[in-house]
Image (tube, rainbow, N blue to C red; front, side):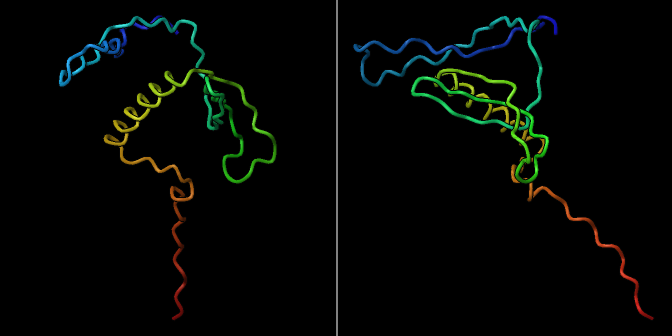
Length: 131
């Protein structure tokens, strides 16, 4: 992939107000800055499975491809990608994902995550009538 043509806007949180900030004064709002992204070395991979674990300092998200997404897999699911991040970045990622899903659902409708509720029943064929 080539270097991204458009800069991404990223909110930057200003430093916390000093202890001497007068009561009732509102803290400054986050500023938006443009950050140039170089995605020339990105690898696009697909996953339909994830496992989230962690330590007191880090969040670990493993991704893999479950070849048998219905029922219990007969073989171990191969985990092929792992993201390790701190909880601050994970919380910002959670917020970004929530906003993205909200926008998607506002445009295309609610995403049902329960597969059984998404399965459509086959229409019943016409039964021969006695006559």
